Image (cartoon, helix red, strand yellow):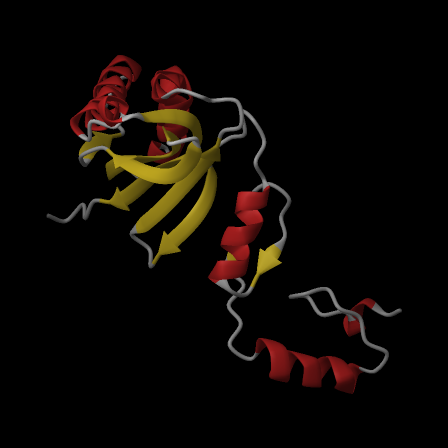
Length: 196
């Protein structure tokens, strides 16, 4: 089949060009191809489909991949975990976070950042196991291109330990909840207006 008769959005093929045009009008008229998987390069029209697809890339040790975008000022990057069973595992991510932030700071000089961890906790109560997802988020902090690697390491460690302290503040272990696994880590990057 002629490549001109293949939908560039969903890759469906058509015998006639008129059928392809009709398909695009009916199925993709509100299409914005800005949702592109950074792992396998597939494109998505709807953010919800893109997010489901990104969640399917649950490779241990995968890199941070773009998860959501908001206008031109916000990007959220996600890293999935499979073999991480304790909240303390997040402290092993310092070097990856430094490398990741340095790469982003080479593209834009200053960001406000926060880190969110989603963890699954289990509560055993009366021979029933209850599972619940908790999001533990750091405070916002600033990083800039001028920061040294050592400074980035120090500030990242500080905010990862802040997340661990939030678990203690919620008294999850004290009330019987046990961390079963860390699902993912999100890093939100907000561009700082350089004119201010």
